[in-house]
Image (cartoon, rainbow, N blue to C red; front, side, top):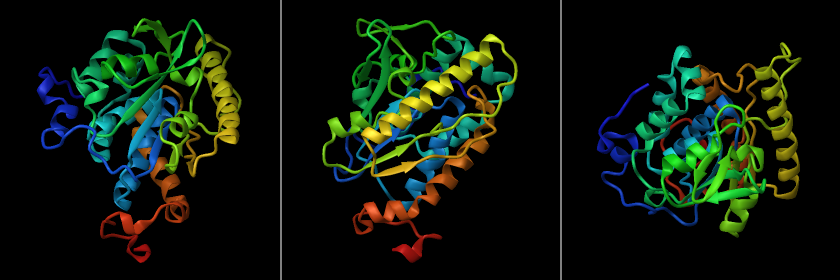
Amino acid sequence: MRMFSDPKATPAATAQTDNCPQQVQEQGPVLVLGAGGARGLAHIGVLKVLEDLGIRVSAIIGSSMGAEIGVAYAFGISADHLESIALGVRKRHALSIIFSHSKRSRFLFDLYGPHLLEDTMIPVSVIATDLDTGMPVILDSGSAVNAVHSSISIPGVFPACRHQGKRLIDGAISLPLPVSVARAQYPGRKIIAVSPCHAHLDGVVAGNGRTATLKRTMQITHRQLILEHVQNYPPDVLITPTIPDIDTFDLHKAREAVHAGQVAAMGCLEGFWGVFHPERYSIRTGSHDSRA
């Protein structure tokens, strides 16, 4: 896990050196990155495929882990760089990043620095949940660190975050796959949604302890919310990585999650080419040239 004591040396600051914020093709699709804990690292694999296809997204909406990765990408941090950061998290560091409020804050600051959501190169919105009303909250301004920390504040693990006058918890509690937000904010644009825990329940829960029960409860809740939401607000392309052997807190299994995201995204190639017009994008020379 790399630490950046100088805000100017953070990946977000480095990525923006030669770019202006919020400069992106408006005709590109909106990318919705769902919740999923460590399974959400599959988002990085999806981003790698999108980059290979030359598909530039015009906006990003993220919930929980989808917010953490989506904000980083919106700042201009490449999928390869995100992968290298994820692969640098070892097993002995993973739990401390998850369960230590101060270490999690430091990790996020090392990623985004003091930058605001308004500073991103791609417009981005972060989903959190208002602890008092139970309703989703859309964050698109203010501190990137505070917004993402709010979106990943798992109940029972982190206390609620006080941000913009509200007490906020994990966005996955109210809106784990915020396709409806993308539809409302960007009407008429195509939507690619990535759901790392779509219709997914592990086998029999091992043990009956507090942690095991909490994780299974979250899986059940997320699954039901996502299934109902996708039925009501179907995206143009839905990518559902199959990640059976990665638990919610297995941040040290990034390699497997990223690979699962790549496989799932490649499996949706027909969907990509059917929904979007490839002539609008520059396709990188490679194994997909037969589609150009």
